[in-house]
Amino acid sequence: MARDRDINEPTSSFSDGDLLTDRPDRPELPPSQGGGAVRALLWVLGVAALTVVVLLGVRTTGILPEFRNPFTQEQTDRSQPALLESMQDLSRYVAAEGNFQVVVDLQNDRRNVPDWLLNQRTLFVGAGSVEAYVDFGALAEGAIVQSADGKSVEVKLPAPQLAQTNLDLDKSYVFAEERGLLNRVGDLIGGDPNRQQQVYRLAEDRITAAARDSGLIARAEENTRKMLEGLLRSLGFEQVTVTYIAP
Image (spheres, rainbow, N blue to C red):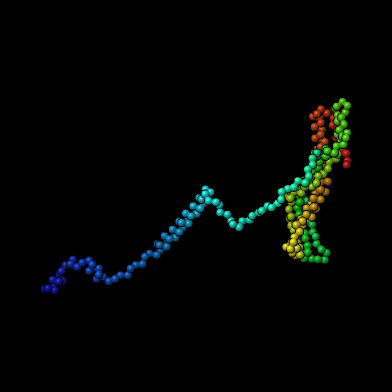
């Protein structure tokens, strides 16, 4: 009977602690690894985006100096100031101007030596202008003759001349260049700084010759005649004669 009473005792007499201690130990679950990695990646991306936004804002507002490439190319001009050598008064009337372009194909080589060894060929496109002018400073005595009634006048002028050819280096350029092996080695040892001067001179000579054959002189004569006729007629002369004296 006593055993039966023990069996029929209510379970409430056992404490919660006793129940827990009687349970076998269970292995603890490891913390979730996937969610932590995603949160770390999102945090890094957020910090990077915020950094980019801040740098763009600082650069736009100009708060900090602009970051530049430390290896950018720099140019230093150590040229000396210009020296005035002479000055002269001009009495030229520029009556016409011609613009020309010429192609110079110049080759310097040696006989019986192959071009791949010793050769220099330059294809140069030269652009330049030539002015045609009348030198009023060269008027001789009696160059202007007025009639007795003051209605006509005769003007004798020196013939127009061509000024020196002005080669425009901004519009001129080397189109192609071929050089032999020895020429390239010579450039490495000590190149000729005046190597291009020869093609420049040839281009100027060709442009000058073209200006002589272009009718620029005749156009300068006509333009000067029209200018003087308009000027002298405005002074009251009814007849104006302009003649040119050959040099």
